Each structure stands twice: as structure tokens, then as C-alpha cells.
Image (cartoon, rainbow, N blue to C red; front, top):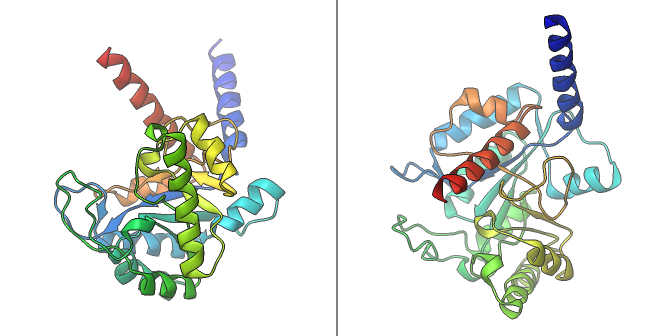
Length: 270
């Protein structure tokens, strides 16, 4: 009986591995700075340590377009791919991340908020420490260095709370502003706060985006939805041991755990 149980358990784990081992880990960063109390501000030394780990262990950073072509058209990716994304477009993404990425011949994506480019982060009106975002000149340099740029809406609202008209404005105008100023196509968007619903996806598709990035809420785990791609947050106190797991073939477990955690918290509130 024990042998049968172990066999069934082994088959379960094998099935899960075969289902998920070809998924690409998508990491979500925000600031790169030493900011006490801000869980989204990763110390620069920690970020460098993470890039060193990726570089020394055969990982290859990829672009959103490469990920899209892989999932949609079956195009082959390099060994051990990983996608690095930065939300909001903080200036320290330019001053800290970009030199390290160039040095290590890596690529990353930034999602700026089109109405807050080159301004203080006053959309974060909940006691966040003031800091600047990348201006247009820095975004041009980011793009010229081979990095990618996507949309993060006009004003960073909770998209499911928007009216149909304001939702279209948030999606379409951010795309238009970025494409006009940067002279490139903006095909990808990430949802502010990771918040979206069926109407959001419908509007994103209608606005001309090819894919959208979320976090963990409401993302499907058993199939790929190009308009609900899950990402793994990298918090300020990220240990290297946990980071190694987050870029491994079992990285989907972290997304599942956050989903279950949210379900349990919502149940306890009732």
C-alpha cells in the first residue's frame, strides 16, 4: 500500500512538472533603492546579486516579444529563459538597473505610466517616499540600449473600477503617447495593481495590445492566457535561496501559493 501511494505521488509530481516546466518565469520589480519600510524597493546590491546568479548559472533574459512568439507561435527560446519587468518606470531603473543590464548583456522591460513620466511618484498617495520617474530622454536611452518598453496605463487606476469610457482612455491614450514619443510600437501592457477582469481583457484586446501582464490574482495556472500572464514579485527582503526557486522550473508554485493565500484571507474576512 505504501509503495502504491509513493508511486501515485511520484506520478502526480511528474505530471505537474511536465505541465509547468516549460513555463517562463516572469519577474516583477519596482524600485531599486534602499528605502526602509518599502517592500517594493529592492536594494541595488541585492539586484546585482540576482543578476550575477542568472549570469553564472546559464540563464538568458528575454524580451516580451520573444515570450509572445514562444507561447503563440512555438518559436524556440534560449536555454533557461527569464523575463525581467519593472513597473512604473522609476528613475532608479535607469540609473541602477540599466548599467548592470548592459554590463551583463541582459535585457529587461519597463512599464512607465504615461501621465507620470519625468515626475514624482505622487500617484502613490499612501505615504510613499517621493522619488522621480524616468523622463522621455531616459526612456529613449533605455530603448536605444536594447531594452523594451510597455504600457502601464495613463494614470495607474484600478482598471475594473473604471467606466467603459475611462478604461478605453487609460488603455488607448497610454499606447498612443508612448508610441508617438518613442517612435516604436507598444504591443504589451501590465495591469496596475495586477487588477483586471473579463471586461478589462476585452478592452485591452480591442485597444490593440497583443498581451497583458498581471501578478497572481485571477490568473489561470493550468493554461496560458496571453492577456493574464502571471508574474512573480521580487520584494525588498528577497533572499537569494528563494530567488533561485522563483526562476526555477517550479516557479509557478509561488503564484499558486499567493492565490491560495488570498483565498484564505478573503474567507477569513467573511
